[in-house]
Image (tube, rainbow, N blue to C red; front, side, top):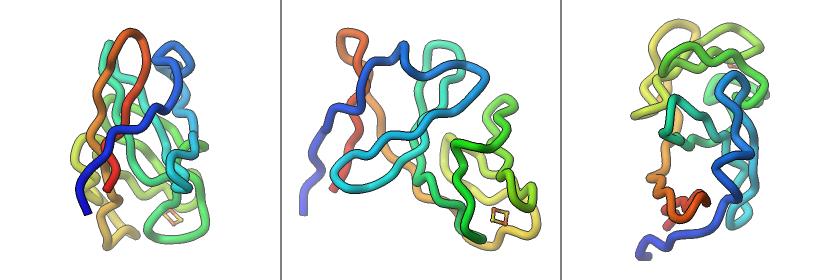
Length: 104
Ligand code: FES
């Protein structure tokens, strides 16, 4: 299936300190802001039943609120135990102050 770009709301809805969550095409995603850039990952942690939007963002690392595993939001890499599986990331485009997410 080919990728399609779907609207995920205004850029200004995503604060720098706290990630937010959004549902796009039936998938719950976490959105993160670092400076003028927005990053998107699956919201569910790959280790357990925790939402990354409730985690702590420091630089490009999101720390899961449940067991403090950390992912790099740029490529989804699992950076430390107890994580063993990367989280999926999604391409983001910013167009006229709105976020577009590439989903296939
Ligand atoms: Fe996220 Fe365990 S549920 S690190």
